[in-house]
Structures are given as structure tokens and as C-alpha cells.
Image (cartoon, rainbow, N blue to C red):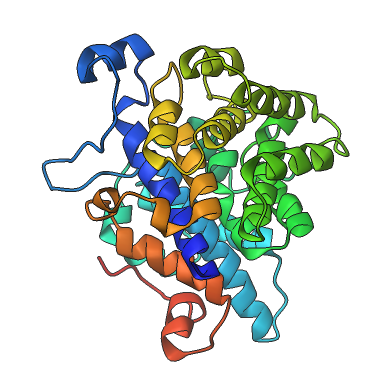
Length: 350
């Protein structure tokens, strides 16, 4: 298994976890069991169009990847570029795809041309409101006090692109664009760190323990660090999944979403189906916990661990694979690369 497979596994795994959890995002566990049976939802829900639909979680993850690669492309061309500025610009393009036309986005990216990304899939209010302000939030100067999980659910690409220490900082910066509470942006840094650690060969428990050490050097880390510790302890206990996840929380806030996902990934290891099923059948933000769990498992075990039957029906799988490959390649300078990342388009062709 090559490293490229880990990149693909991370983004595909996240999208599949997102697609598994999206149909039950706003359901209680009891409601899920009544609708899908005693074991809950255990297979992808296929739409009338024959696809398993992704939500805003995967959409924003892709735009994070686009912003990172845009920044690297500018840097390779000898231009000044701050990655968080390019990611912020990419989020402006995502905002445009959600029907928010009040701000004119920078059209340099390629994702905005994909019609399937112009579907509104329950975008988070904090993300929308923050981006509509036209101002980039930072952890040093936040423009809200939100600890929602909309920050962490999109930062996996930072872990694929940057080394561990830088990945943590970039994950924090990208999450803080919209989420200003430490429990909103620090989980973004921790997830990026864990992804970087996993693709370098760490196991998931080790990556989580290392992330806690880094977290503890940051102000406001208590909630995120304590939830991660709890997830590690529960994963090694005899507590069943339902009780363990209930003890961690519901995943609507960043520290809980990361901890639930970490618990599921450690507890079930390479059993992708069991881990994702556990991560979505609860009283909480099922698509985000499913997405983060899939990111972690994919970065650790690669595409091989992803059930083939879950890849084929996945919406925009080719776009996801292209984004993963571009993160892996970092920069090629080929004509098609310049079209995707460097030309600065004037209009959207849909």
C-alpha cells in the first residue's frame, strides 16, 4: 500500500462516513432504530439518482483541500501566499455554491465548476454566518465564540499536506476562520495532527495521545484534551458503543465530535463497517462523526479498508479522488494543474 492510497483513503473514507450519517443527522438513536431496524443504519442510503449523497462536511473538506493547493501553487510560482487566506477564499467559493450570491468569490479554483457541488446539504449556520460577514476569523482575533463541530469536520486535508507540527497550527487556523471558541478550533488542529501522524505510520491511539500532548500547550485546551483522553480510555474498556458514545456526548461541538470519532476508530480498528456504524447510530451529529471517523480510518488503513461496495455509489467520487491526488502531488506545474489552481477564471460554467 503506497502513501497515495492513504490520501485517497482519508478523503474517500471521510466522504463515505459523511454519506452514511447524512440521512440520520437530525435523528435520535431511537428514531434511527425505528426507521432502520435494531442495528440502525449500516449501509449507504442510495438516492433516487442512484448515488449516496455527501453533505456540507465533504463539500467544505474539498474546498479546504483546494485552498491549500492554491496556496502552494502560488508559492511555487514565486508569489506571496498565506494558506489560511487561500482557504478562506475557497470557503467563499463554497458559500457561492450554497446559493449565497451576496459576496463575489475569487474564481481561481476548479471545484466551483462542478454542478454536483452546488447542492445545499444542511450547511452549518455558524459557517454561513461567519463567511457572509466577509471577514476571516482567527484564533487570536475570533469573530464569534462558537465551539460547533463545523470547524473540525473539514480540516483533514491539512494533515495530509503538512508535517505534524505545522498541520496542527494550520488545522487551528482553518477551523478558526469560522469558529472562535478554543473547543471549536483546537479540535481542528488535533485532527490535522492525527492525520499527519497516521500517514507517517502511527497507530490511531498513539496519534491521539500525541495530539493531547500538543493540545496541552494551548490555552483553552481542557475540553478537547479531556474528551480525547476519555475516548482513549473508553476504547480500551468493556463499555459498549452506545454507552461509551453517550458518555462522550453527541458530537454537535468540536471536542465531542473528534472524541466520538477517535473512540470509534480505535475501538473497531480496520473494521470500517463496524467503526462507521458505531459513529453514526447515536443521538447527535451523525454525518460529522461519520466523516471524521472515516478520515482517521482511511489515513491509517488506506483505500483497501474501505468496502468496495461503498465507493462505487458515492457521489462525486472522482472529484474526491482528484482532490486527494492533488494534495499528494502538491504541485506539478502542468497545464491542467494551472487551469485547476492558477488561472483565475472569470465565470462559472455549469
